[in-house]
Amino acid sequence: MSSKTQSERSSTTSSSPTPSRSPPRSLIVIKVSIDKDETWLFNDLNANYFGVKKVSRNHDQDGNPLSSIRVDFESEDVVLEILNEDGIYINNRRYYIRPYWPRKCYQCDNEGHVAAECPQQSLSEWRLAELIQQQKTLVLEKINSN
Image 1 (cartoon, rainbow, N blue to C red):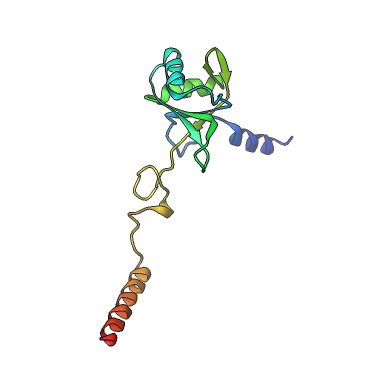
Image 2: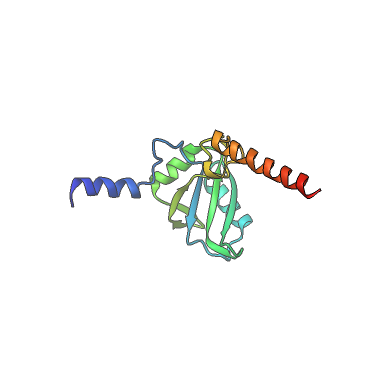
């Protein structure tokens, strides 16, 4: 395999954060039995790892539970340690993990959406002129109908 291919493969499979992102504070743990509830998982993880803030079960678009969970930590240092170990232990069993970064808008710097969906988007001059023209048309139609 060429060194370029090796480099590309290692960059896509590496669990370390990319330079443009801050280190993650959350992990996705896969293949966790659906029989394990969030409280039980939180207690088990909290007994073995420092700074566990929250454990939440992932769900599909229909609301059905998935066999993956998200674990939020108080510090990215713990997350980086776990990522370096390539796994996390729950009930003395090793599970595969990946980092989790929330969706973050680079326009307003808030989490939960991306720039294309940003509620604080500034209007371009062209779009503003288009909206003003639409309003003028509506007002004229209203006047003409009276």
